[in-house]
Image (cartoon, rainbow, N blue to C red; front, side, top):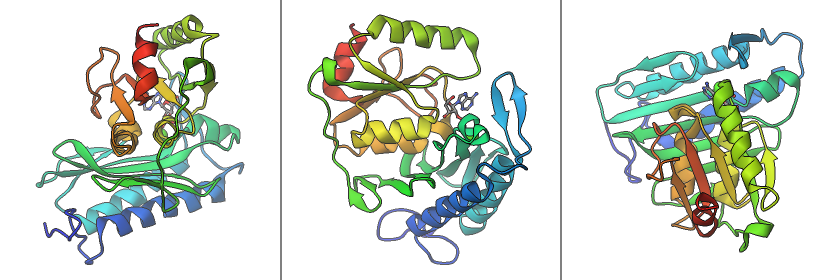
Length: 267
Ligand code: 2AM
Ligand code: CA
């Protein structure tokens, strides 16, 4: 695969990976707005409390086509269409709608999130919230930007002022555990249940919230967000619930302000 000066693979049409991924995410966002609060979403449950729509599936198919056409030797890992192995060290991860439960109810808080992994580590990531036109973007070593502007988080300095975002999922026992964690931390933190893990990670990296946790996420939910956290230059950290550095396969995540995170774990 040809590499461009930014160290990332060059697309078949000669475009940079950054330009392709921006187009992909913004295209997905256009489709979100077209169907949001419409009547023909084709919503159904994959299993209890795990919802998918025709919109999720058709966006993922189109993004998969675009990314595979532009990067034929890369692998692919998507929430709705599954995994294909590539024959290079690169893999794309795609969640066409992160926050589908919000999307189907007409709650305007969801995003598309796409990442490029190199040997399982995210090197390019985008999370696009079409409702607010917020593009969170990072390439490894080049910092996090929000709508093209470099973002440096300005976290709360005390636990009393901190905002802690979290989300739940389809697994009831884990949800009970998540609420137990929240209950044990209140009234110390101001808690926010947001409904999109991708935006939760992006907000925690940008300092919009101070911390975020989830007990059961998949690589496509978190790959871009983990890169955002990494690109805060150590102001923020990402660990799993055993305290190990987080990877896209950790499952459980606690991310955000380094200064607050250690104190939350011991609370
Ligand atoms: P989703 O909307 O893409 O399913 C709130 O539940 C957050 O957790 C959302 O970001 C949601 O992503 C994610 N999430 C919950 N359960 C999930 C599952 N089984 N697989 C993938 N993501 C999940
Ligand atoms: Ca999804």
